[in-house]
Image (tube, rainbow, N blue to C red):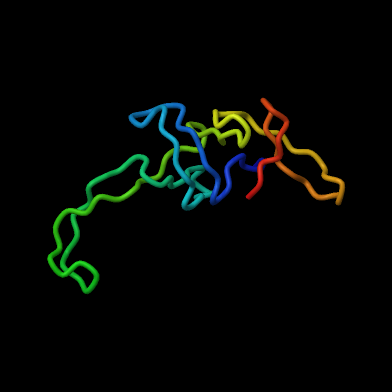
Length: 107
């Protein structure tokens, strides 16, 4: 399997689906499923039983995963969605960069 273009902590733009056009921060990447959980995106209602954290129980809103193909990293220079590339830095490590501006995408 190839490397993913999304990492935890990245700011991403949603290309498709109900939340198309929104941006958010990646909270978790589910590698095996090829999905990611993004803050404030793809909110679902989940019924919960009463517990110590939520003594009342009831319906709780939480983020559901979204497929990685529907996400693009945000260009740090322009703030718009971009594709990414990888190149070796001067130290010899692989770094991700924006294809639009050429700017390095920092973690």
